[in-house]
Length: 147
Image (cartoon, rainbow, N blue to C red; front, top):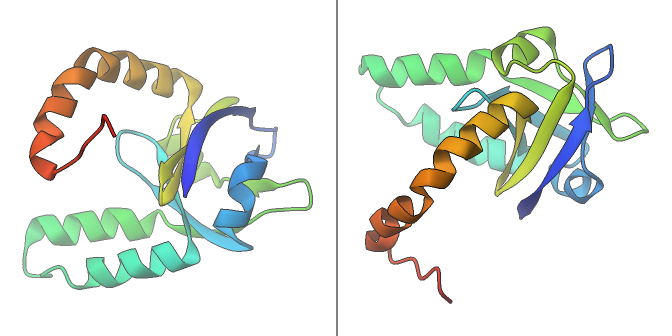
């Protein structure tokens, strides 16, 4: 399981250090793709394959399903860490996530998210105001956040 928030810097070649705590979970080869909310999603291969099976089951006759699958898979790339624990983030993914120099890498249970620091701060500022309301809405999902 991935959790935590880490701040790192991309080098001039677009390489990003993955937090040491995430490296083993991501494995030798993992997939990075366009995520939601202007960030990147990184999946260990087993998680990616499970997600791929679910997405392949979507009805291709529905325009929204086709659009989502196209978007999600067209941005995907297999990544490997170098000996320093860095992953090369290709230009098209850096552009999508507005990654320039400062990045935030967060663990979100089964995946890792990669954010530009500015976008992460904007997102958390907006989300923090709604945190309690969101928790109330999730009460119907049988979550006990007080446990």
